[in-house]
Length: 422
Image (tube, rainbow, N blue to C red; front, side, top):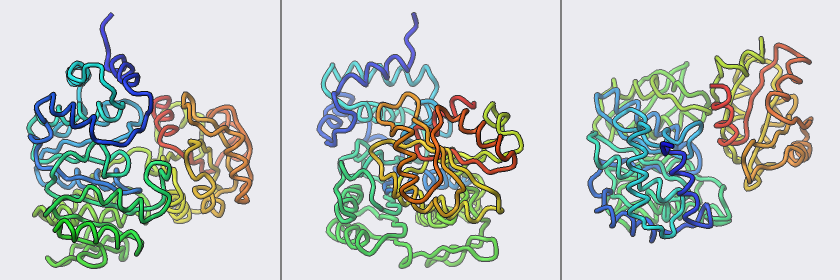
């Protein structure tokens, strides 16, 4: 039987007993065995942060492509298929090419301990090094300092807003987490910094100063705001008057600002900056589902999907929902047991009529539907359990066919929905 990329990925899962084990030793070992592909990448833009990494990357990519540049892009986790993580000069990696890269990395690793994320990230770097492009966009997986992507010297680094998340790996204070994110800052390499708390900004600026890295920070070197239904960006080169981002939400204004700061630093023209606003696509970030069996089942109800999963994401999502045309809103929520569930739900309690808790299919670390509902009830939400998203949706629309339904709480749940509803 022909081996698929899924078969090889399953083998890679067995190479280390832990899913997450932050160190760069194993990555450097494998990269050396592969003749250091990280040294042969097209100019890199390296993106870290707690929230907004993917959205910012998608806007930078849209802008660069609008400028006529070809772009490699690496992101994680994937939603429906692993191939989403590796985009070569604009196109998702093909199955045959992915198999080739994975098999080469698996063979060169020689059965040594290495995590799934580490070896698959190396496979992405190998693919990027062997294909021509003008730029490479690398999104950090977790943290920054010890993340498997942190093996490059980029053209520019980016740090999007830092907030509390992944405390078990990155530390239990904003200062510790910011220090991990700031670990991507390289000597002499400019760093674009999105809006930060005073605490996080102090850490980032300290690391940048010690490494001689010029800081290009929101509120200091560039400003961005919404005015009369347009996005206005200002830096030392002047003002840009642009369409609002295609990605919904007030928080996307800040992400757009960081993307524009990067594009302006690289010398992109105004047409490229406009493309960054109008052409960016990022699934499961307040995405309106338009087709598929779930949409058919929803009937006249609006059906939305979002993968945000921490307190800052919950706050941003609540603001987006409150800005939409008024309509009764109900959540179908599944989360991982490693997340701050009540922190995520608390701001949503003010904008949703109810929450239906579901377990995430096939996820070992899913929070049970019952525990999800208990968390919702603890912040004052009306909550009930369902055996599946389909069951939850059917119950909600049977009571009111004209509601707004948002499936939310986890990128893993969002990926399941995109696969099933494809």
